[in-house]
Amino acid sequence: MTDPILSVKNLNVRYFSARGLLHAVRNVSFDLGREKVAIIGESGSGKSTVGRALVRLLPDIAKVNADRLSFEGKELLSLSERKMQDIRGRRISMILQDPKFSLNPVMSVGEQVSEAYLAHFKVSRAEAKKRAIEQLASVQIRDPEHVYGLYPHEVSGGMGQRIMIAMMLIPDPAMIIADEPTSALDVTVRAQVLSLLDDLVQRRGIGLLFISHDLNLVQSFCDRVLIMYAGQVVEELRASELHLAQHDYTKGLLASLPRIGQRRDRLSVLNRKQDWARDLERQP
Amino acid sequence: MSLISISDIDLHLGAGTRSRQILDGISFDVDEGQTFGLVGESGSGKSTVLRCIAGLYRHWTGSIAVDGDTFESADRLAWCRKVQMVFQDPYGSLHPKHRISDILAEPLQIHRFGDIDRRIGEALEQVGLGGQFRYRYPHQLSGGQRQRVAIARALVLRPRILLLDEPTSALDVSIQAEILNLFKDLREELNLTYVLVSHDLAVIDHMCSAFAVMQAGKIVEVLTRDALDAGQVSAPYTRALLEASGHYDLAAPPSAQS
Image 1: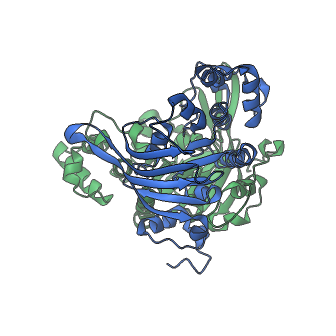
Image 2: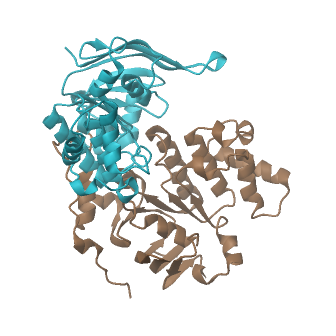
Image 3: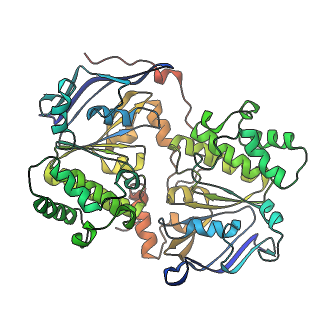
């Protein structure tokens, strides 16, 4: 790929705690261009840790290192925290799983969106409010002036997630990390949120890193898929070629999904092998 | 005769001007040994139907009968011995400070069963957990193991009906397969009848011979699995649900018109 937005090479995350060392992410390498790349894996596979390591949001006990972690030509790990704040939220945004927990319950949703704008741009409050309302409209919220004054408990899950997306988009980022953005949503609402994200990638040329455990969804939505197991990327595939997976873990995952119209008495169960967790070769 | 017979359930929640009708004329029958599905978006009332059957809401109108006995006429404890529920989130449904043995003993004590120790061992065996889990706490178990404990707790009273409220949506897909297989095995082994709530049509299709699609407190349509597989859905809402849930699997057969 030419000119990736993000380039990661041999990313490692280790947690040092009283209970010893946990090597949570091992030698993860990938590039992200103007496309939708998914990271798939079960809980505990390290997929969310990768997302958080990219924006340096991990707790202090986590030690992150990488041969390369460059975003728009800047080496993220060597930036000062001050410089990092110009990137986090401004150039790289993160959409979290559940809008109920990530919105501030005692602040109107519109103020939260304009706060995101004020944090990065020197503008008046009135100007920020105007931009926030425009942004709410652009995520297909009807009557954005009215919604601006609502509190998080007054909006539905789907609308809450669109408000989160509006908040993440208002500083005009080059890349979005979406950590299970639709798992708390209904299938019908999910389609709306996905088409919104899809539109952003197409129209604004944003790079989207989509962290999920939902294989069906990723298969139809993303361009490429990285499959993580026990902290390592065990396989990388084009989403359209997921059925050609070689690794036993990916094959096992695909086989364990129930599918409409496919009568099976029993679903096949993942038969975990010790071998899957052994260290893979580092990229040179 | 069907084992579960539900007719014309209405339920309102909230008082005065804030009163909302949550269920509107819900009726369906479930035969013994069948798995009946309820599918719909959140807020459509599908979990509420289960709560009415379990007796967690009691102010509904209409009639719910199990095995010929209506809810009003039945003894509360006897009803609970017949109908048990498994909840969505195994992280929230098990008391964090109780050992697995205490969690499983509680319903037995309430219902004054004897031979508690043997029954706990048997229930753990049935859900594929060994005796070594008996003295652990929920936090020492994985999500799948916790859901197995929740299933064991439901089974320990030897019910005839299990109400399953999104039993796998908090689990990874690989674990989901294990739990769905377990439900199928238990159904054969113990001659159970299930009512399964899920938002995932593929899970419903895998488990249920028939299911109802719910929207805004009403049943939009009742479908058999054969009708779903053949793409014979009539309600536009069901079609939308079908398209949103896994259209890539359905793209192949020519019957699915687009």
